[in-house]
Length: 318
Image (cartoon, rainbow, N blue to C red; front, side):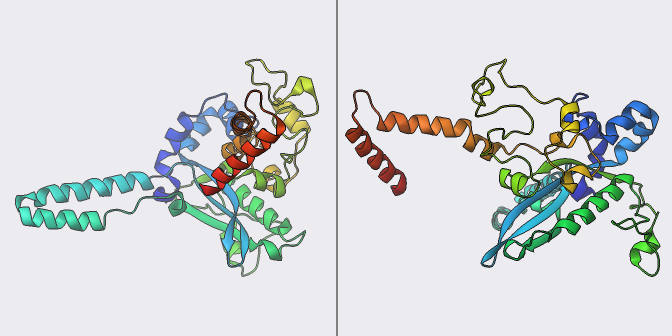
């Protein structure tokens, strides 16, 4: 469990989180810290932060919409480093014999320790082919996932199913109802959503990037000159939404955002830096470079068109 969820690093994780981190606003963690400080002091090392990820992946001739989760801290890299050090010490000991040392070196170089990857400490929650997806395919799945993470936050197995029906009979969950999830008393808290813009829009139903008011965190608007999203001054004309506004007028009602215990949900999705830059600053920068290449001084339209064709051909050749 420690390799995947970094349970031994939970206290260290929470200690390094700033008190004004927006992901704490209106969260059960912040409430416990403020109202039950002694309880939080005990529970901090047993509260394991998680990330939730969703994306499309290749599958046969189609693609899957897949959901996974894992621990924000992990000891997998530490364990890998310790193993590498152990191998290194073993190699140094073998240097007494030059031939043996060379042989060991070649073996280590050929094999070595597999580089850790985030997928090594992640767990698949659900997956389904996009081509076989109907309007309500994921509705109940999302409810089940939200229900599961609610129980994970409490640290105990649920006593009711995702529809509020008591768990009873011979079901495995009925035998576990009300019992701790782990012997150590750990509980699990979704700290981050890690997905791209397409997933935010198509799945979580956050504002589309092509809209005039595309940002759920601020009031920037492409149609309003005094709210221009291209205003990068220290005091821009657009303003960030406050937590109260995000809470009273949520940009989405998706169950993965509204039903999983956490902060004001507008703050929990991590910004997709890559695609945000592609649609914003990087787009303007690349456009400016292309404009400079194609529209030189005293250049007429014919010359600009020729330069554009030459530039495009060079890009394709690369």
